[in-house]
Image 1: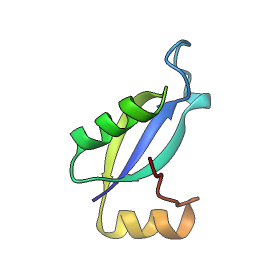
Image 2 (image 1 turned 60 degrees about the vertical axis):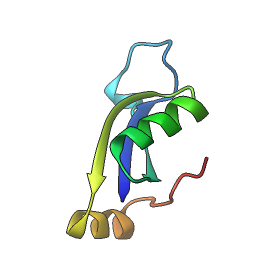
Image 3 (image 1 turned 180 degrees about the horizontal axis):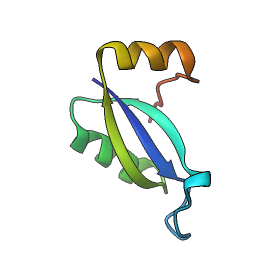
Image 4 (image 1 turned 180 degrees about the vertical axis):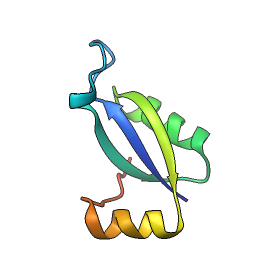
Length: 70
């Protein structure tokens, strides 16, 4: 499954919507995504969204779609 992760680059500053970034991760479930990010990044995860069907196709065609590798 493909997940879109919204995050802030650091946990040390207060989150600001304007500084929210996103990346795409392939994992079996949401918990696995949390574990990957916790173990491999300093990111402050705001939201994890499962992408499927037409939403996934839209992201692949219209966003800077590239799966993150850890």
